[in-house]
Figure 1 (cartoon, rainbow, N blue to C red):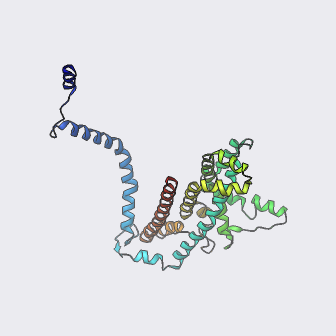
Figure 2: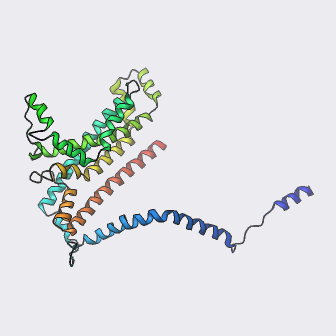
Amino acid sequence: MTTQVGAVRRDYRAPRSLSDPRPLGRGLLRTLTALCFLAPALTILILFVASPMLAALRTSFFSSSGFGPETFVGGANYARIFQDPLLVKAMGNTAIYAALFTPVAVVVALLVALVVADERLPFRGLLRSALFLPFIVSLAVAAFAWGFLLDPQLGLLNYWLRGLGIRLGNVLQDPVLAMPTVVLVAVWKSFGFYMVVFVAGLQDIPRSLYEAARVDGAGALRRFRSVTLPLLNNTLTFVVIFALIAALQAFDQIYVLTQGGPLHATDTVVTEIYQSGFKELDLGIASALSYVLLGATLLLSLIQFALGSRREKDLAS
């Protein structure tokens, strides 16, 4: 017994005094080390993200051209956004673009993902790569290529359609067809990314569920409705919100193909930001439009976060 007590006493370490500086020193050293590693990234974020955002927020309350004196106008720039007919039309066009692009891109990506996720499909890896390839290409470059394809005189697409007795005409100068055309280009460019996301979600669904559904006599459509869609809900929500955010930021193919025309039929919020800021030098309106767009994007992100959190709670319960 005495030996055991002695061993305990030899192993015993008295608690450090609260005044002992060593733990505080080690914690401070860790903090300083972490800040040293974070400093380059934080410097870049502050200089090229945070500072311009704060400067744009300030400019949105001024009448400014970027040169000469500025005039404080308060919320007049934000009020003008909802009063100027061209800006209201641009917001309406953005909503139309999002309403066309999002469901088409999501549905096409999901259908293609269902095909290329099938293990019985030969060369499915090569096919996935080929379908994903347009996403790698710059949207401006893709828009230039589509501009040549759609040219009413020299374009291959019009040439092929004329061989079938169909005259497409100059769709980019048609106020009715211009918007669906730029949406088509964006869908062709983007659906490969959404397809890859869907394929990843489909691969997470246990094969045993499909086998059980087949045993119960469920056909392909019933398996899709009862197994695939419910278990793909989180992925589907992510893709829809991501596509909506991308639609709100549409610019490249519109600027290359139509420059917002014809008759402002394809003007969007981002094209108006460019027009106001770089051509008309109205930085106040451009900054205010940027923050309206930022607010819409943040709202969609919060909706995605809320839906994802609710889904996780439902699965946990």
